[in-house]
Length: 325
Image (cartoon, rainbow, N blue to C red; front, side):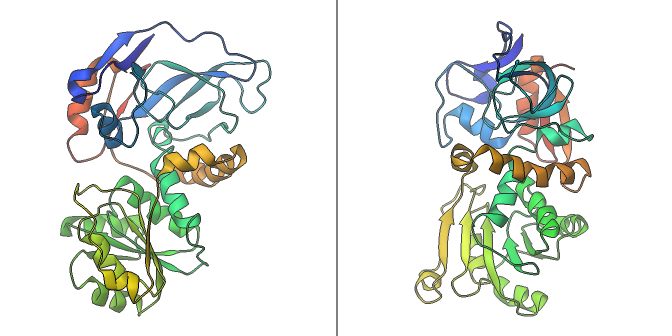
């Protein structure tokens, strides 16, 4: 069985190798075997391989953390899937391999749809969904504000917010992506900047905003907190700028605003199977319909790991491995 393995942390293009490993064995009573059809190369995958992510798994390991594929064998006690079903690779299960074996009881058959998009359903859409539903309780018609609106999470936020009856203010850093985010369904799309509060108030009719989502850090959180209502919450879920987060102390002291973090890893570790199933029951139809979608730049076989990693470093869409193509 082919798989992409790392035996030491370092530069991803140097340490990620396509190797031959023993095939997975027959499933135990509660397990299933999945032929992996597609698995994305996420930036945090590369950060983890380099040793710079929030955790360091024991080595050697098969890389990759999400994907989708076909069930090819089931254990005698499995009732939630059958052979031939398409399903997800569980989050953080090694995914850059031709086959995996897992016992995740929350997995369900996916509806018809694009397998590449389903392969990207395990991380960004759940992050977006939980940012909108699990931190601040927002009634239908509420406004939220986010930066990085053209990112994978940002695009999912726009789609999921609409499905929940929420309105979005979307902050971007390049004028040329305004039309793109507007076409996705962003209610308000504006460039970041120091006068953001005045421009957002004008665009929303001074509507109160109680939730801000930050995936960039640097000065952008401070700009968004200038748009938040008193006692509003800013949630940090990423830092693509690679710079410290700047926050004005007056927002915390005089406006009683708060800042907190979110990492999907902790949620998955604590969530009950029925919570995960409920979440994907909401997300899977949106992905199947193309409402949640991420542009695909290229697909590669496992033998082409160096080319895939190089392509993943460029902008313009997601790179995926297709292990059994």
